[in-house]
Length: 403
Image (spheres, rainbow, N blue to C red):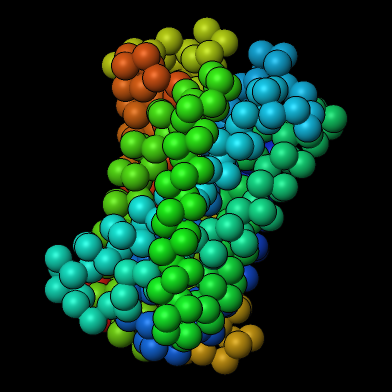
């Protein structure tokens, strides 16, 4: 029993916090899954939109998960404090997150169109329509996710939570919940011809202008976060778009058994959240000198890795059970509880194994290159998991004969 407790993490409180956050993530991802299952008509009417979905939703987790990770480190090091002043640690991080939201949304639209055409999905909607959906959807969802992330950080200080344990799952789940409805609302703006084109062009110019102004400011932390974040977020977006292509190509499988579509957001979110928990914990411990950046994980790092892997089994089983219940409630087809649980566990454990490698060695690489692991850890994990998670779930579906 003592050995099991040691594997579960540094203390019982940390385990409870992570399990609670992951459980809430599963339940809130249900809303995203139900939404995805309910808008299949929109996805079929606007070819290419499904390609954008994982990347757009994942980007909220990338941007605001990294924000939460930086705020967690500031809490641990005693520099955190809520303030309206733009020159504070929190103020500069908030500005950086909003600029990154608009810039990456434009980039995602361009990547989505380019990759879709390159891989043979030539009937996708025009790029300016994708810009409108991507940017407007990102701004609508980011207002909610930003407010939640700041409230979570403030709550962590007040109630003594470890933000590293709850940040990635909860921020990702809120991004899932508000991301899909926001994209659907934004998609209503692309049916107006010339208006959509003009709005898309204005959004491109506005986002570029915001980035230039921010990079020329005298706020050192803001400039550093933007310079370090833009490249990794663009790479993350490209990886997530490829994940969307994989899902788009299997759209018929998911629409034939919509319960699998209900499962999809929670599956990707959980794998990314588990990797994010590991990345956040490692990053904070490296900043504090508790974990040493070594090619072979030390004792403290191994305990965190085991902690994350052990959490995966019950959470992925819960994902499947929730998806099955939701499928029955909204009256869509399902392969059955046993098969959907099997698909979730097979795909989930493959994805989490990969997430552990990316979280540890990605954090190690960031440290060796002199970069902030708080900024790089979450985007590297979640974007990689968008791709690996999509393929692992598709692999599980094929292996179980569901397609």
